[in-house]
Structure formats: C-alpha cells, structure tokens
Amino acid sequence: MKKYTAAVVGIGRIGWTLGFDKKREQPASHVMALKKNSRVKFIGGVDSNPKTLAAFRKKNPLARVYPTVEELFKVSAPDIVVVAVNEDSHLSVTLDVLSRSPKLVILEKPVALNLREAAKIKSAANKYGVPILVNHERRFASDYKAAAAYLTKIGEVQSIEARLFSGMKLYDKAAEESGAYSLLHDGTHLVDIVLFFLERLEDGSGQKRQRVLLKNPVVTGIFRDPKNKAVVRELCAHYSSKLCPQVSFFMSGRSRFFGFELDVVGTQGRVCIGNGYAKFYKSKESSLYTGFHSLGRDEEIRLPKKTGYFSNMVKNAVDFLDGKTQLESTLQTGINALSVLEEIKSFLQ
Picture 1 (tube, one colour):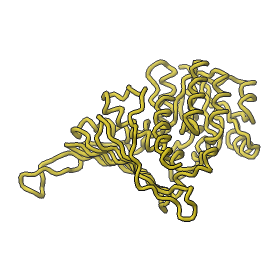
Picture 2 (cartoon, one colour; picture 1 turned 120 degrees about the vertical axis):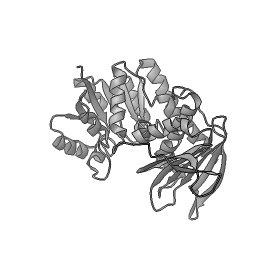
Picture 3 (cartoon, one colour; picture 1 turned 180 degrees about the vertical axis):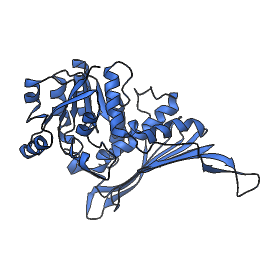
Picture 4 (cartoon, one colour; picture 1 turned 30 degrees about the horizontal axis):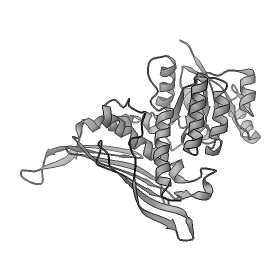
C-alpha cells in the first residue's frame, strides 16, 4: 500500500518535544504521530535553531534536518508538510510551503494571528490547489466525538457553557504581533470545539462548515490586570442562536491551574466534558422525588482509554489523501474560530 512522505516545519514543543511528556497521552506531537502511522514515511524536520536541529538529528538518525523550507524542497518533495512554527510565523512559512504545492498541509492552530493573515493563507491555498488540515485536536478525539454524537440523545439543547482557566494573560494589545496571549493560543480550541458541537446540531453530520455559527456577542465581566489596565485577565462572552439559545464562554487568565471544560444541557440530558473526563447523563425516573425525573449517568457509554487525538488526526490526513473521506478540521473551520475570537477581541481594545 502506498506510503506518503511527510516533513515537519518547526520541531519545537508541538512539533516534536511534547512526544517525550510522560504524563500526556501519546503520541502528543506531530513528529511522533507521523512516525507512528504505518502509511507515513517521516523524512525530515525543519527549524531555524541550529541547537534544535542538532538535538533532533541525534534522536532521529534516519531523518534529515534542514534550516529552511527551501533547503527541504531542494532535496525532496514531501506529500505532507506540517507547519508547527510560532503563531507569528504562520503566515510567512505557510505561504512558502503552499507555493511548493505539497499534497496536503497540516497547519497548527490558530490559523494565523488575525483574519487578514488568514485570508492571505486561504487565497494562496486556492491558488496552488493545496488542501489544509488545521490541527484543532479535539475534533479528532474519541471523547469529544462521542460527546458530539450524544447531543442527539439529550433532547433540545438549551445551553452550552465553555470555560477556560489558565495563568497566561487573556489578552494584551502589546502581544498582537506575537500571538502570546491565551484568547488566541488556548481560546481557539475552546471556540472551535463549541463550533464543532453546533455544526452537529445544525445538520447532524457536521458537514456544514462554511459559515460562522456565532455572531454578535454580549461581552461582560471584563477584568483587567490591576497593575496594567491594557492586560485583560478575565471575560464572559454570551451568544444566542437558533441552534442553541444560550452559548457562553468564560475565559480566565488569572487562575493558578489550567482547565478546559464544556457543559451542554438539553431538555432530556447533559454532557460534561473536559481535560481527563467525559460524563454523559440522561433523564431517568427520580430516586429522590416521586413523580419526578432526574439526571443520571448513562452507563451504556463506554469510551476507549485513549482519545487518539493526534493519531486520529494523522489518520484523517492519510484517509483524505486516499480519497476515502473529507478533512475533519479544515482551513474554513479554523477561520470560523478565528472570526469569533476577533469579534470578542474587539470589545477589549
């Protein structure tokens, strides 16, 4: 069976080194996930840091290393190219890669620093006819997929509450050029997975992904850093749509822990999912009150021990190149998430 060659541009944390984190579900990096897939031949890594290249070469003696995308394509033409550089380099590196017409680009989230840059990437992708898979990893995770499928069992969805907690500043205008703020860095995951759920509510299959499903928020609870009022540490963004009357995002950049969670409540059930847990509830005859129903755990739901978030992403890439399926996370869905973030950001400047 045909193998696809692949290279990774940017062999830092998400590109490579998170694959050594013993606490994370593995594979947890692009290099490790590509190497694990039997249909992929990993051929090389690109990075501008000589020390990174030297360390990578030592651990991956069968792969070649390159200081630039140009050097990579001088000696090879990989079918799949992963762009895993810092956010402020997404535009320049992705445009460079697209101009060389690989069969597929896997682009780390967020798509770009802003919608203006994202539009340039989309234009180049169309020009060179190169499809882009955006690594919003929860779209590929078995627990989140199960949660999305379970939405059909909880009746009419009444509310979706999405919460993010971290110690990283939520927004800082001074960080616009680097992207080093949590609203973009982590908020893109939170917004994207809510959009993923809404796509399922819209047509049952999640195939309608061409338009932004959340617009015109009411932003409240903006908490600014007491020592620097330009830095936002906390906010709530509230939406209402025909798909769900209550959608809210709570994001904190002043927590001493990292948390990521969604709570979806329907007229007949509930789904609670976050880092390390997924709980499914359905309406049952109450054991507490005569003549009432209460929510109880749905014991029929069985999830695998591993979510397969990175492995499933690479599998989707291979299956797409085989012509068997569509991409599950596209450039357009990535742009949709960025559109929501930019609208929220407009209230903070």
